[in-house]
Length: 502
Ligand code: BES
Ligand code: MN
Ligand code: ZN
Image: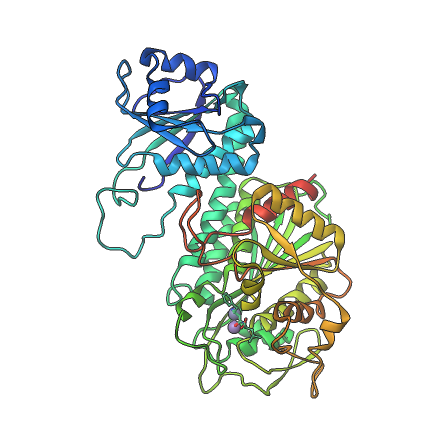
């Protein structure tokens, strides 16, 4: 499929043309409308299923091209296995699977969103639509040669996709929300995918400022403003770069009570991380354009919340810098006075994310007194060693918040795994010359990074998500092959929807 599809909600008995998608279970049973539509084909589905050994397992697809008796180009029969095992994430992935099988050049696609037993909930139908939307995303802006066929065909017109549901009004409402979340995810993907010569801090801040259109209040702090506030840790990281640093505050005030204490989400936005004077090896350094995935998630989340008019007060704060080595760059040995007043001895200029976050966190905590703070950061290579790309590392001073995040992870499939914190780890970052040092040695690298952050959040319930593994260089899944997955938007949207709205 090429180009962004236009997805809309229609009546279950809407007219179909082009491609029809029907859902079947492990018994090859169909919903009443689908069954009726397939009647003219006789027992074609059963015969082909037998030949192809198609048993209706989840995410398996049978493609009937130009089936006799129907004026259609394709019928896609999509398996869900046992309907009782289908959860929200499975419906999303089913949508992604359908999206991946839409024939190149298809103009019209209708998905009959019904279960063999009858109705599919509007929310689950909207998840199918969202899966199709996410699967269709391609970051190909910088490719000048158009491919004309295949899955990544460029320039083919966007297909019109109808999701046919039993209750159109409820379906439209559910899709309107899901579509807003989808746009937030795609924004986060786009920001992570953009090259670092295009997406530098001021440009990131400009793109975040576009959320004004959705009713998000935006403040952008430039270097003089941050200097005045004493954000010397964040500023030190950016001082070796030709590009100026920024801090962006985004506010969505959707709660019924405007004075409700907000939830705050803080993101690491290192637009490019060379390591600075403690420079990184050349191999794979290009991936460090994704070192702003935390900030991208925060921005995408704010988009999602505003687009679906979430009934919550949420503050998003992103610290955006570029970590470069030059004559003005900060050095190992430097001692920095952070916004909080605490001093930091720099041991390694490649441990820059915590320096950006400590000022962003302390500022957010002091200014907004939020009911909780969650930060997201591509903080340590060590979290990749521990958890790979399957879970983000979760560190928290609050069991309730941690449990809620773990639960939201299970619901969305953006899973998190809790890691330890404690005084023995905290001691590892004590410094001979200052209040703390910015690295804790070889062992427990992800935890000592989290201990560093914890020194800046006081008693506020706080969770830190180390997304170095999940936030970039994603592998292909049903819902897309984008290098930047937009990880965390669904997780935090779910957390807020489940616990902090109304
Ligand atoms: N941005 C990196 C962490 C990272 C590594 C993200 C791989 C994504 C993939 C971070 O700034 C960093 O360089 N961390 C150092 C910390 C060390 C110097 C204590 C690391 O993990 O090696
Ligand atoms: Mn680094
Ligand atoms: Zn980094």
